[in-house]
Image (cartoon, rainbow, N blue to C red; front, side, top):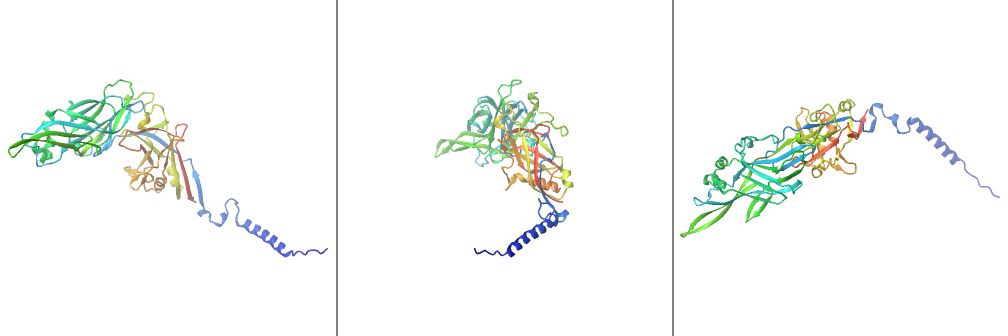
Length: 447
């Protein structure tokens, strides 16, 4: 048999190559989990890490000042909550007729009817509850000439005898007829040419929506969102929400023949207007009422948020100094996760579906919504409620990075419901509860 000859040189070469490579690679690094670790100076090592131990604390703060001046939408009605007590929404405004040099039609002009239009755009609570719609005449409107605190009462600035007091239930348009004697008092030819004269005759009005019956310990709600741009067209007349329309007639002679001319004029709101929100926490149920309001030292198990100038949340970033001391740090992502307490006594149709986070400048003044929630000059969807784990998730990457750099912030975040023009609320868990607030940070640190 003829034997096959094998060339051993390639095998010897391959074996030598493997051995050499093993020795070379072994000499290039000491930690197998980080290739090339000892090739980079220790001071320049980039560490990619995730931290969930950042300590925060949360508190409930009362909102003492709210500005709704010039607002064109808001809430009217009342809510008596076991948690937040009584909240009442009302509307105040100056009204002006459309200026005209034609006057009202001369001495023969007579009013036929004066109608006030109430057009709710949406509602809260039980619409079968009958409420009383009241319209009062203001006696002093100096506070309507500039910004006014919306949570302050206006006692002594309106006539306690209402121009009308009408019962209302449901959600439909409500036409309320006023006395024609009052309509006649508004008809002055001079006032159409000079609105300052009209304001002296009718300084403005105060519109309220009150419960028909109030029983101690009874918790109910019925309220409406109203938008002043909402209108209905009646006989070619645009009848806007929360405005008057005067229907009248006068005699006009043509070729010796007298004809009756029927006319309508609208009295619409000016920019001198605001929504008023009054809060009475004493009517809440003692078992469920808010605790530790304005106590920013002792942390309760929950914090409370309610819109319309009621209460908001304050979160202190307790470990901020520790992180500043470990600079430089690049925040890749920071996510704030806050659990919601879905108590059965919460008013389900006013639970907020998003949290909005505000911050203050380094001098303590309000600066606005955190940059992470603001896109193209409007609020984005960041901070929406997650039903699967009953929590709100808010990315705060940009805010935290700029805060660490000392550019913005006072070391706190301020929580509110998604809007200030609708009735919204939430009860949130804190670090003193079984489900803690979590700040999850993915970061890169240059050691």
